[in-house]
Image 1 (cartoon, one colour):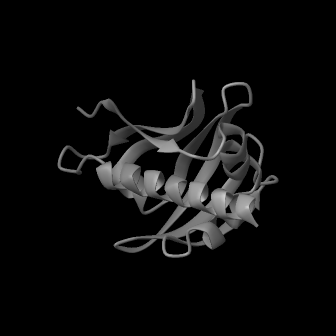
Image 2 (spheres, rainbow, N blue to C red; image 1 turned 120 degrees about the horizontal axis):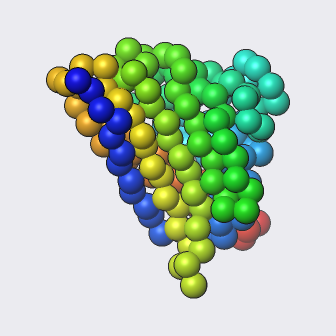
Length: 153
């Protein structure tokens, strides 16, 4: 019987949590420009693409092209947290449920992004989604580099 599992990973950022959170909350349309080697497109299918209940179609690269449909499940402005639930695409054939939560954090002088995956495998032989977590962390590093470059200009 499959069970709900959890993976977490965080990375230090030079950009402020407010600016990083703003990209993921309000400016995901910039993500293909920010991470062109990873993200091909993001299309809003329902809602405004920024609020709870919005549904988006992502086309990205993880060794091969991948298409995924997500729904914004929760937004916590105070804690700078957004939860996305994958509701369609290739990933849902491997996982009964798959949620990714981003949190932009300031701890003293250190800024971080923390990604948490909560998932339930469709079958026991499905690998743990470490590559998905690494992909999200890599995109967050791209966001940080983009924000730092924009700050200099």
